[in-house]
View (spheres, rainbow, N blue to C red):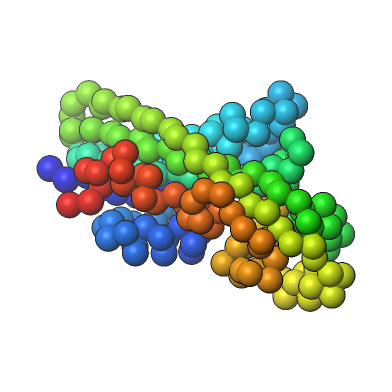
Length: 204
């Protein structure tokens, strides 16, 4: 029996990367509490891991009903931009986006993406078995010095507001980014090559 592969994310960027990799999957977006306790705010790598696991776990709870019969592979993912130890999440408003972009201008920062894969075997009328594993991939992104005009034009475009760190690398491209060290897909939000290297059974 093949796995029913589920992406627990509404992100069009993650969906596109998984489609391009040749994975047959469906989307089951979840809405989870992304609040982080004070101790996690001081541990960004652990925080991004916990959020990816929350998303995958929430999808498993919703999908594995008492009459479910089959094998399920649920993928949860989360991305964090971290600058000098501070987590830069999705900006709350123009001022927050402006603050983040000014801080990142001319400096390097970390982008951590966690991927959590939950494997479930739930035969009808039988005992469910579950296993999961989470990995974290990190890429270092170095920004050019940004002008006020670049920052204001980008904020006016509306693009920063659903993106960690107030930017999408596929949107700003060479205009903002000097260079990266690591995997571009990690910055986009889904290191799909590493996922498939670690879990080749996802591609039939």
